[in-house]
Length: 485
Ligand code: IFM
Image (cartoon, rainbow, N blue to C red; front, top):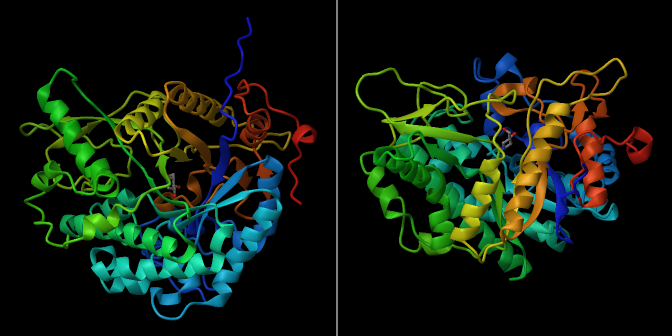
């Protein structure tokens, strides 16, 4: 029996995403200075195998070839990020024209290929000098970020379709400043909450700066990695309260000020022993609530939690890298439980229902805000087969099920405007270095050669048809064409 393929609304935006530090390399070229990830990756023991982003995918030199792949895939939009230390070495003062030239050429090439550029202003590569001055825990960083945003908006102007201020501020604040498994590697819960606030403030100031340069019609967005956490025992009031608490410190710490204009009261109460939140100044919450043109949502997996009682051993299986210090500030008495498999190479459970649940939940909370899936994808241990191809059937299956889950949310009335697959290329996966491959295009990290995986052919077919192909429909090389240019 053959059922009709799931189709998507006309104009649905199919894209793919990358980030500057993960793909660019050229860490010391054309005036670029160190970011916190250059420092962190050079710190022994921080990144698997001592990998750094020094070369990464060498996209800085191979961007033209990569735009060719983007074009041949048929992507409608490409989401990339701008390296702040390339454009404004040191993070304050003079701007570096050679830094902006790189992005300007990239944007022009995308537009000439009929691809909409979606730019993220901050995907974790904070200039090291700003970290030395206190990083995101320091209010001034938010002001510096707004200056950077205004400059970039002036330079790239209306060639950018959507301006995303921040990527996953939860990771920047809580993995960077609480658990320390991301740069800058600090383990200070109070600093993590201050960082969350200053990231929020930076978002609001930057969004307003972009609109003051480009006009009110400029499309301003932010990308959040919202957490789908289920109670261990849905009938337990204690476990349901755990979910409320994690929703506050994982999701509403950003959604609250950005979309409701205020921090949630329960968050302030849950974290009162950590900070008095005196870093929130009069007017900050109103600034943060800059109207959003679209809200970006990243989704990968779910987690399950319960209240921890007594002295029984703690479990740490929350989908993030192991650390002695939890990123969940104010939630020391919460256990994250192992989720049933299957898992990706990250150890993250595969659960497409979480995608539908998240989109439906956010859509119900904020019915007037269009949503965009700005990241979704999976790392697997890919192999090059004897035929020279990468038959990544597990990735195709993951994508099929998650994109179908996006369709389910759309069917139920959620306003989802697009889907960006993470990631275009295998790249530097932060603390996991080059060991975890998310790309639909394989990168040989010795030769830097790019090879389309089966998932790339499959995704190209999906875009062409605007309909979900079966997992076993992998078009041939000649049917799609995988060479750049
Ligand atoms: O690689 C990252 C990306 O930089 C941010 N979102 C999650 C991805 C996979 O871990």
